[in-house]
Length: 342
Ligand code: P6P
Image (cartoon, rainbow, N blue to C red; front, side):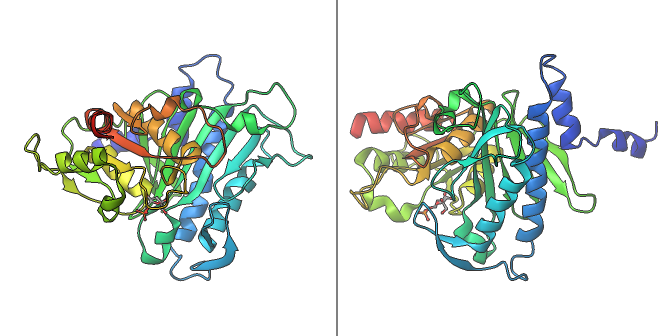
């Protein structure tokens, strides 16, 4: 077979990859496969808007404020509705929940109800839209806990250890979908010329030797002593390790993606900037937990500074948490400094 023919047969679409993974589980019904494919389709639709956000009327802000108290960007709204509308009728889901909506999103009465639960942040980092900085969709998939009927809030409030699948779509210089069903982490790059996500990063593992650390140093004065000492350690200031390079985009998916591929640690620690606010900015259910699932599948780890993220039992849909995520040894070092110095 000539090389170009061989190349042709080496192209793996996301559908082929998901089906190949499904074949390893004879009891699989194919519903999860179809659900992942629905999410990939939503990613293509959202990508088509993000690459033109500067040109279309879709750039800019609505007058609305979401449950997080954040101004809703028009692209946020578009992404949120796109994911819901591509999933509300398929019969694969019992309930959905989105960062943009205070309560879980029910399946409309005239549609069939399925066995999975989809939690998602439709467009994380959306405040960066106007500055042409990469943004992303993050998703978590659980099996429902309730026996039948409409899905419930309790179906959404599950710890990350129950995750069936998780991933993100990053809308940057290219659009990539990165996901795991518990069998490694795999990355697919969208080829806009054919409208297909093609396998580009098979079985991603965080490099053992890290390159970066990612944190908003502007908040240093609000951190605990342990976090300050940990940051000095990462910068090599205590002579205990070589200095890591600081890279901080201010877009969680972009910062996580770079550290996943190059090795490093991202952290958004608790701070005392506003003592009245809960510890941490990032949301547990649709930001920290799905990325923690991916990190551990890629030989990394994620913690809130004291506890494994995947073990945290959620109490509220939009619950926030401090997050340290990336190379296992760097995250465990954060836990050590916080344990020693608070
Ligand atoms: P700060 C974006 O608004 C976001 O939720 C994450 O994507 C990002 O990691 C974080 O907030 C940035 O927050 O306070 O450093 O601007």
